[in-house]
Image 1 (cartoon, rainbow, N blue to C red):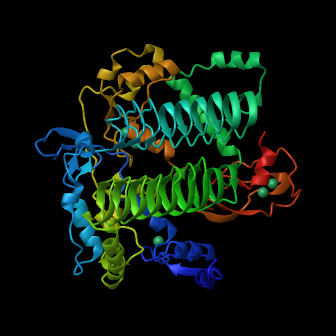
Image 2 (cartoon, rainbow, N blue to C red):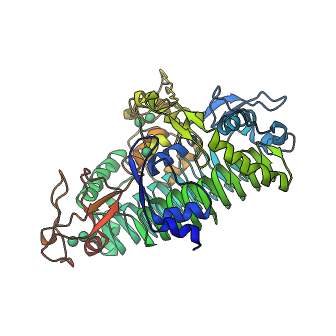
Image 3 (tube, rainbow, N blue to C red):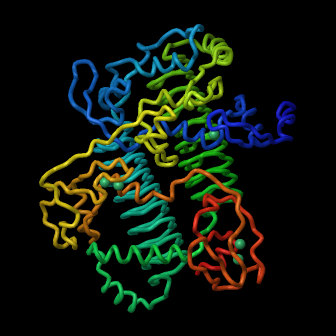
Length: 610
Ligand SMILES: [Zn+2]
Ligand SMILES: [Zn+2]
Ligand SMILES: [Zn+2]
Ligand SMILES: [Zn+2]
Ligand SMILES: [Zn+2]
């Protein structure tokens, strides 16, 4: 530690968020990190910072628009809405050498705030219609890296044959899944790691040949269970012999929609009665947040898998993400990220879409670049500012002047309903009003949902989802109950979504089944879905999506067990370390105090699981 960091590292301060006016704490370790990378401390609270990064990211909505590459004009599907202010080229043309992003380069203007100049540049530089890198047959994916044969997937990462999933990493044959890693043959699963042939399950690690599991580890041939460790042949948490298990399973026909609904309800009841772990984690040392695996000193972080160290305020990351703050989707050996979305990169600040890059600030979409400031859509370039090429010496002289100018002439936002101004100096991420995406199409809506009125009041864009009506559409009630009775030409039929667009799920009211999907349902012997892919996604993640921690006390009351709010009492099955007395342990949890779940500390939870 040098002299400078010592002065700050002794204290922790409370600050007022510029955006929501709430209080937040910047502690001694935080100051050390900001000093290490020479950025000023944040002026937004952690939640507002995360929301600000998510506002610019559409991972689900697809739009038809024209390719704007010279001489093209063909219709394509894009993650960027038409009329939003982005110029869009088709993937193949964007990746070709037929155009030069430096052609849009411009001189820095010391009479205009930096953010305004950057957004003029960003609006001029073409973007690829989807963010697909090195992938085959993934044309309907909003983003994919090194993936193959994926359909309507977002964030496919080294994955193959996946459909209707978000962020499958190193997965194969996963349909309707959210944030799973190293999995194969997966259907309707959420936050699972290293699982094989698993259906309707969440928070499972190393489980196989099972259905309806919740927070189970190393389990095989189990059905409808909660909190099992190293078990096989259990049904609704009761042990069976192999023979009896197989006999019971033979009676359970999950190909029928009616049976499936009954099992769903029974499993949900079991989950509701069972205590929850205050945080889901495995091999997580000194971590706070939720869904953290193989990590050390990750604080206030969520969905960190396969390696994370010294990370704070991150959401969706891992694979050896190190020494980083405020990451929204990042890792793969990335280091020193701050307010960024980046993979395989080092020293990326206030930027999105940096891949295999070094020292990138205030930039969007950079592949194999180094030393960029305020650039958009560059590949294999270094020492550029606003897409203009400089020498190393010129770059090193100009960047500090721009940083000083950003502080002298900050961008001032009139957002927040005109009630107050928000000032953006060097050290702030891009202001959300520059996003070309509607709030309800952005990732922010999933974690920080807003109604249309609330979004408009906050000056976000909003998109009214166009409801589609087909006279001949088959209602979900008209679908065959059993997959075996489904006709082979069902994929030619338009089906009405069970929610009929009466929800906040971006539901269009109708959907279709594709042939590959039908083949999957038949192979797994599960009935056709009754909801459209959007509604399925939101149903899967609802109630689980949160980016917030509360300080709470373990709800275990000792020998009497616990009472959740509004739920039946839970009776402990074992004697706990605290005996007759209520458990004294406190923790940071993503279960808000008003939620009904029984929330146990690690020790009490470990005493209850079998
Ligand atoms: Zn705030
Ligand atoms: Zn729907
Ligand atoms: Zn819906
Ligand atoms: Zn406890
Ligand atoms: Zn206890």
